[in-house]
Length: 398
Image 1: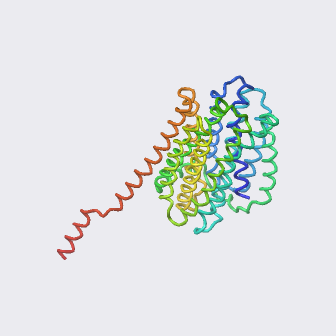
Image 2: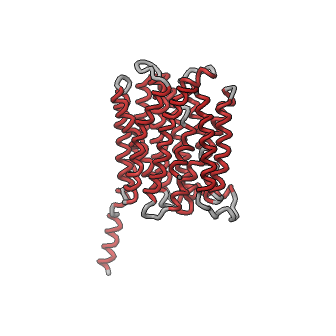
Image 3: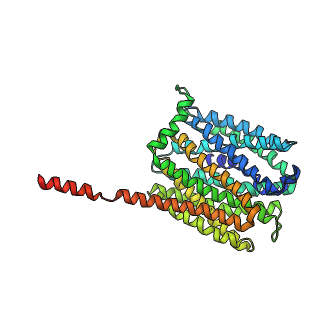
């Protein structure tokens, strides 16, 4: 249920990606200029991560999730019925904020798991969430091709309403919510967590760079496939989500690697896979086979790294998993927003080559950050010659 719900909820902020070429004429924009719409929704999502998800550590999570989902239904209806672009954009921003209900469920599931199976449980829930991210494109492209883009959001509103009823009945009881707490202290504790657990900050950097690479590609893909030589419809563009969905299969294996203590090594492997993927993505401008290989490699890398990150950080402070989620995913989706913006600018300035260069830059920075962290860790684990000499001298004197 957690995996299914997370996938359905997170899909709300990705329905627009394959529809940019269809939505743009409705409001008098070109598709490339409307690319910032994806950025706007992701900014709303990051804002919700920062301001709402920490409440999962002090409030009844069941009540909080159901309340956010009811607001999500209203936001979806506002998007579907919006007569002007300003209302459409405002509703999209609010939709991003309320869709953070998906991320309240990941730490909720982690808190119900044992230490030995937490990585696998997080991987299972994240598999559902990641499938939602990728299959959202397929669903929205198909529905828009048959009945128009507004119908996509109307159908989504019905799905979320049904899901809300199901979760209200099926979610485990959460006894918290009676303790005394202050919101400013709760938010201040985010900085305390970063000071006490530097790994959270490092993993947040990994996540931001990885998701920036992911967003660069998926935002610009619509521009490539709707133009020569492909000239694909919304349904065909959305179908690329099926190819990317194979990457979600990496989530479970990444979680199991983290359970066995190999989370750091897995991060390096998945980062390298992401970097290599952009060579195939570049060739994909004129080769469908190369593009599909690039999509598969990119999604395997991003999803696997994401699960490795979460498996590591959720083991650090069991009583603060919602706040850890806030720190990590706020950085993660701000990285995605930067990637989406960069994709639109790069495509306008330098076409598909510019998109691939930007994606390679983010992936290269990620791999570089991992290598620096590995070097620093090995250096810190080396014996200090001065300390050894000092101890030897004391033992000799004794």
